[in-house]
Amino acid sequence: MKKVHEINRVTPGVLLSVIEEFDAGKNTYVDEGDVRSSVIGGSAIDFSDRILNVEQKNPPMIPKIGDVVVGYIDMLFGNMISVRILYINEKFSKSGFSAIASTRISNASSNYNSNWRDRSYKGKYIFKVGDIIRGKVYSLLNSSIHLTLDEKDLGVVYTICFSCGHEFTKVPGGLKCNFCGNFEERKVSTDFGKESFTALYDKQFLKL
Ligand SMILES: [Zn+2]
Picture 1 (tube, protein in one colour):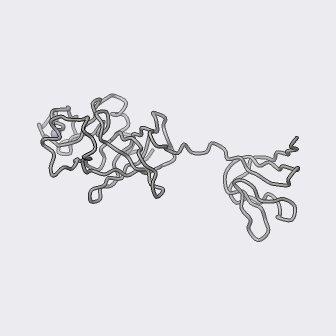
Picture 2 (cartoon, helix red, strand yellow):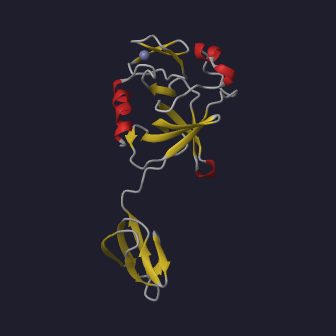
Picture 3 (spheres, protein in one colour):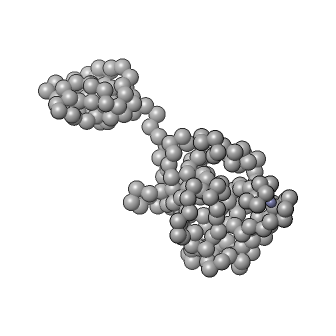
């Protein structure tokens, strides 16, 4: 049976012990012979093997392959977009993860044929900074979160007219402003304009 002694809540950098007494275990590091915590959590000493571990408190939800995320576009670069993640599988995420997605239309996808494809320019999806989009994680290569937007329920879920700031309505090939009639080409999700996403659009400017 393991004999474990639990210590109080610790914060990153806090001195836990010295290396002569205990080995540095999970979520700890050694600095000039001192064993310190690298995370916020609760520390525990296992006396049977003299290892000092820290259990991390509320580790961040890390997106996995197949997860559906919702976030806003914070950058466009070349054929890529950068997406600041706000929801992972419909759970709000404070972790501030960013994901990337290609704006090139994948040849592999043949399950989605509608008007926007015929009208899209040079085989690229069109997006703008501030668009709230839904994507699905398909790769975590090179420590980046890669999203695909190539399904019916993926793409823009909410945005407002860039000319006048009023609401858009989904039309074939993109979005049309209810107020000024401005048309914007977009890859739009099937459930564009749901109430919850209206609230989300406002949130991004509050830096949540
Ligand atoms: Zn407008």
